[in-house]
Amino acid sequence: MSNKNQNKGLGRGLDALLSNAGQDSGIRHDNSSSSLTSIKEIELSQIIPNPFQPRSEFDRQKLQELADSIKQLGVIQPITVKKISVGRYQIISGERRFRASGIAGLSTIPAYVKEVDEDSMLEMALVENIQREDLDAIDIAISFQRLIDECHLTQEALSPRVGKNRATIANYLRLLKLPPKIQMAIKSGALTMGHAKAILSMDKEDAQIRLAERVVSEGLSVRETEALAQKPAAATPKKESQPAVAVPQAAQSVGDIFGKYFSGKISVKPKRNGGDIVLHYKNLEQLNVLLKALKEHNLQ
Image (cartoon, rainbow, N blue to C red; front, side, top):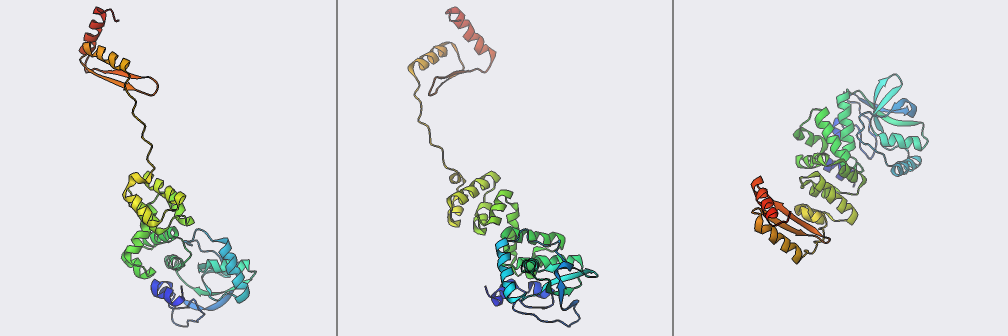
């Protein structure tokens, strides 16, 4: 995706928060009344990661690829940091570039230094990461939820900040209602957003998990998943029906004999090996009548 298309699709996003400080394709100084200063080269040893970092995992291979690129071309886009004390800075955005620069063997990195409070820092970090193409759907959903909870935003207020409509935001937030096992499958890429939306249409957690396992094991498409979600019974293979066992004549005869003296219900239940003859009595009187008959006929 080009920078032009990405910016169009994502709205103002972090660029607005940073007062149009810089573009992905290059560097621009900002000498306005904004608290953002010009670019500085800062020692990597003076920088600490962002505690509000929404990205839970960094792909090692992609970090190495970025490090190789930095070795060849340098850091094209500066990171953004907050000064926390003399000679100490905290990353607002750009932790991947910071980590990759260390892998590449750099000792310094270009950075914008911005004075922000913790709420603004959290919002900028979350919005910046949401705009990254390699952030998985669960991390995006968690970032949306954190923006709502910790920055006290509604879905309507969040929409222009991240450049996504309210329906899209709502769909991401719904992912957090899925069982942890399914969320991990989404994070790993085994399930897509399309699969997750289909699974979410099922009410029961155990049914959701069974369908998710079947999607992964059988490599089902989103359409196949949607069809199964609408017919929950199809999500689990049906057990083969067992052929009926005929009632042996002897068992039926015994049941008939008891039936002459017992007014309750008699059930004859044959099995592959043996079976059961069950007397269902409503009161003791029925049993007493049966016992009297057995004594009279010397069947006791």
